[in-house]
Structure formats: structure tokens, C-alpha cells
Amino acid sequence: MLKLRPLAIDTHREAVAYLNRACTQYRAEEFLALEKIEIVNDGKRLTAILNIVDDPGLLAPDELGLSHEAARAFGLPPGSPVRIEHPSRPESLEAVRRKIQGGILAPEDYAAIIGDVVGRRYSKMEIAAFLVACAGFITPEETLGLTRAMAETGHRLHWKRHDGSPGIVVDKHCIGGIPGNRTSMIVVPIAVAHGLTIPKTSSRAITSPAGTADTMEVLARVDIDVDEMRDIVDRVGGCLIWGGRANLSPADDILITVERPLGIDTRGQMVASILSKKVTAGSTHLVIDMPIGPSAKLRDRADAVELRKLFEFVGHAMGLRLDFVFSDGSQPVGNGIGPVLEARDVLKVLRNDADAPADLRERALLVAGHLLDFDPALPGGKGLARARDLLQSGAALKAMERIIEAQGPASEILSPGALAHDVVAPCDGHVRSIDNLRLARIARMAGAPAFKGAGVDLFKKAGDSVRRGEPLFRIHAALDSDLRFAADLAERDCGYVCGNF
View 1 (tube, rainbow, N blue to C red):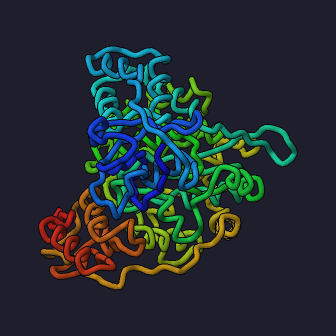
View 2 (cartoon, helix red, strand yellow):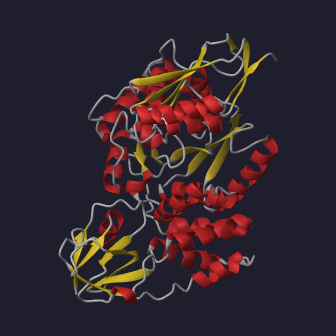
View 3 (cartoon, helix red, strand yellow):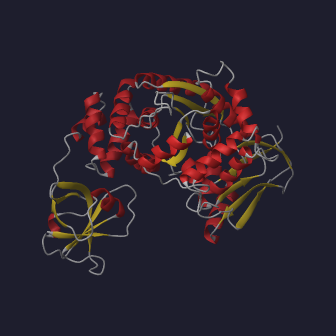
């Protein structure tokens, strides 16, 4: 037996084990680096990727090291006796092989694959093979099978009104790709102020400069488990938390760590990811915001209609009532890109400040209006007016304050990065267009979201007039190197096209 030793190594959602090459119980040559092993303790098993260690100062010959993720998943204290074995090959990999060859998989195939993914019997390479195979072609029926499999592996929540009767549970989701589009942090308090139940779970950024969870964390604690989430929603009516801790769709949390870095974002996987999380969160009614623009995920209306039909097919089969908003995705929303700057914009809207970004306010009201129209007690078509009244009266701000108090206010007040660099207009004229992807990349180079104060502060939007040398936006960073990386990227292409119409 080997003694278990947790190591301070972050392997980001992949279970990794470490074995000393001079191990006294096993010959390291029997277990090749980067192959899978099975770690066993009294019937408890964990599949992990093996790395070989040559430094005796890091790991003793009679120890087995575990990364953060592996130690968390295995759940045994340091020093626990374990043994290692060669794992059996997951039978579901045969279905992956058939999919790679162009086959159509049955619902039970997807159930087996997702079960093995959640059971950590797939390496990241095997997960990538599955995702790439599905990216080639997946039918609507297969998408439904994948969605059901992902939902069934999560903790499904059920909500009731305070009087014990079942009620509608609302949620919203944006297809994404638009920097600064932080409408959830405005829509949720509006829905709560109206009296609807909205258990909103959101993701952290992987390839973008901020996710809703990153931005909400500027104001409140978001690392909340499912039991505390229940308590918050029961007391307040809604929440804005990180979905990874709630563990509502563990399969999606694993798949997305491979999917995003590879740039895989196919329709079937997108629909399965979104709807499985909404179903497990207990949602019954969902509004989907679909931004359309030349640098958005959806490039034209035909593209959006095609995706909407897939959502409708799968969503209705899963028991969800859906509504859709086709919105402008031609440029960033609000004035800030990055957690602190986006949180600033959200608070300005909720406080009805005179300089609050109008595009963020109106987009949030539009989505909130569709959400409130789900309420059977509200006259048809009155959702938008009701949402506007709740925002202007201050009721939405008070609801947000209750949510923040229930989740726990942030421990410190953050501000934009002290290091700054202005990117200026190259000529007189107007801003003709803004590239969403380029601005998002510049903000990430500046350090967002790892440093919450990093990002891009926008001074000009499409259609605004500019003078040569006038600032278009300001880059904020905490480190000289980050500021230099972002400034160099902006110098090559700042994402703005200026000139005469």
C-alpha cells in the first residue's frame, strides 16, 4: 500500500496522480507517464492520469501524490493507505469510436459515455475525441439524448412557493460572445423584485474576459454549494452563483474544460450544455438571448432561427417552456469589459445613475420583460413596462442588495487596475464597427478575469464621432507585463474601424 499525499498542484478539473520513480511498492516502469491508473481504497475507486516524479523532495517512494482535483474527488485524508491498479477500458469508448466513424448513437450510448465522463474514467484526450466526433455531426435526436444524459447525472432541484404549491421557476441565458453583456445581474433582481423564483447559476470565464460568476464575485460570494443555494433562494427568491460549486451538471463542468480551449462550440453541444443545467436547476420557463452580429457567435438571423428550432425541439421534450430574444450583437454591451468594470456598469443601471450605459439597461429590460411575461398573473404584453417600473422605482436595486446580503458581501472593494494605457483614434470621422472578439482578447491579455480589475474601459461606440488622437478605450492592468501584452495587441489591431460612412 502507498500513503496518500495531497499536492498543491492545480490540474483544472482533471484528476492527476504522482508516483515516485523509485517507488518501493510498485515498479514505475509498469505504469507509463500520462497513462491512466485506478486508485483503490476499501472499494472506493478513482481513475487518474499518472505522472512520474524524479524529485524525492516532492514525493517519498512510499507515497502517491494527488492533485487538488484528484484529492477533492477521492475525498480521503492525507496518509490514507491506497493501492494502484491498471484500469479496465471503459466500454462506452466503443460508442465514441462509432461516432468518430460517422455513426448515430442511441440515448443509452450517450448515457454510458456521460456516466463514464462523470465517473472520471475518461482522460482529457478521450473527452476531446468524443467532442470532436460530435462536432462533425449530431442529429437533433442525439442532442436530446445527450441533454438527458447530462441532466440525469446532476442534482435536480425542485422548488415550491412559500405556501407549498408548485410555481413557475424562471431563468435566462445568453448565447454569449458579446463582451460586457452582463444582463443577468440586472434581470435576476428585477425578477426577484416582481416575486418570481430565479435560481441563477452561471459560469466562470474560460476563454472570455469575464463570466457572470466572475463579475458577481466583485460584489458577493458566489462559491456556494447546493444546500446553501436552496436556503438563499427560499429566503430571497433568487441567487447569482457559480454553477461549478453547485454541481448541478457535473458532466458539463468537465466537458467544458476541454471544449472551450479547443474552440469547440457546436450547436448540439451548446444546446445540451445550456438546457441540462436549466433542467437540473429546476427551471420551468427560460428566456434565451440570441445576439446576432458579424463577430458574434450567431452571424445572421437565419443562423439564429436554425439554432432556435433546435432549442425548441430539445427544450420542449425536456419539459421547458422557452421564449427567445434576437438582440444586437454587433459590438460590446455597456462601457466595461472585465469583472470590476462590468460590475460598475451593472450597479450604475440598478442605481439609475445618469451615466449608466443605456444599451446595457435597455437590453436587460427587454430580456426581463420577456421573463416577466411568463407570469400568468401579469396581463399579456405588460412584462416590459413592469420591468422598467421595478428598475426605476429602486425595487430591483433593493432586491440585488438582498441577494448580496444572503450570499455574503465581497470581502473587499475592488477597483480598476492602476496601470492604464489609452488606445486612440487613428483619424477623424466615426466609429464604423467594433470587433467583439478582438476587444475580448485585449481585455484577457490585460489580465482579466484572473485579476478582476483588469480589462477595457470603452469611451466610444459604433456610430460615435471621433477626432484623431482621441481615446477610443483605456486598458487597465495590474502588472507591467500584462499592460504591455495588451497594448502591443491593440497596436497591431485595436478592433475599431474608424473613418467616414
